Length: 362
Image 1 (cartoon, rainbow, N blue to C red):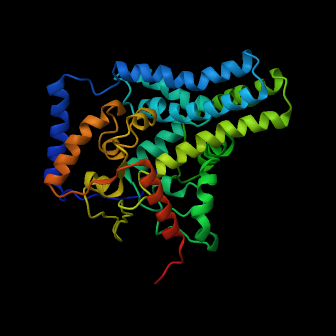
Image 2: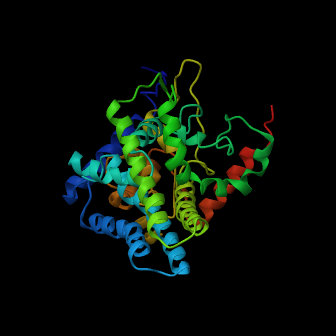
Image 3: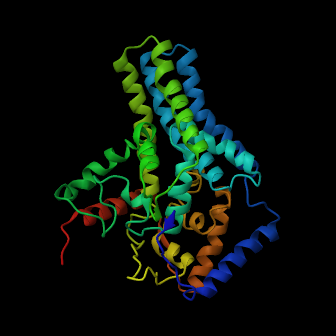
């Protein structure tokens, strides 16, 4: 296996890098807090898991009416996205616990939802977090040829309308994960910067096993046990997945494909102009930091800057360490991209979709 050689600068922003790391470390020393999950995070974990598995149990065993069942599938969709944001995401970064077995346990909830955690760690933890907003390498910029998410991506005539159909496309994300995307990724010879990528047999085995489990409890068992038609099942199944997919798709796009963050490319030698941390500051945005309910639900992913700088720190700590990052960034004249509300961030994403959908001019 070989890897594309992209090198970040070792000179740019050295003082900022040193100071922000030192100040954040000192915060944990000074407060005596662990960088991992605290009691509030553990309580949230229980609540988020119940938001998904609770409605499922009610559907299967409480005999709800069709309308009640439909509403429960909607809640399951909200819960599924929450599990991805607030439980598995931290665990797969090794941020939930210092115990790798606990991280692995909570990480497997990602697989239960229908997405492969092993492939996520490659495409998200390694590739996206290292090569953020670098077209042709960052897998998050190539979610679908239907949506153009960077200035260097191929443009087709239908992209001029992408600000209308991008959000419905996002809603199909988890269905695609469950039924197609992971299989396609495992079969790909090249993934991001990795060439001729080989996967351990155990991970191939786990892919098959967890997909079978997800299909069984999400499709086979409900069709077998519930007194509903296939069309009624399909309405509930699509409601759950499209709700989860839309929420996940939108929240992750608001971190990088909005006004403010840049799309940076290496030169002909593979060299980037900035140090890695400066690159993350230039390509990432936060939003709605005053919205405590949103912060709770999305696992601090509205603090994407702090997440990209300190991915192995539990998201429950991002609001506090963001104060340090903002202060040090201002001191060293380093950009800190931010949109004050969720609505303004979504509007900014729509504006970027419109801009990226326009014909390319020479």
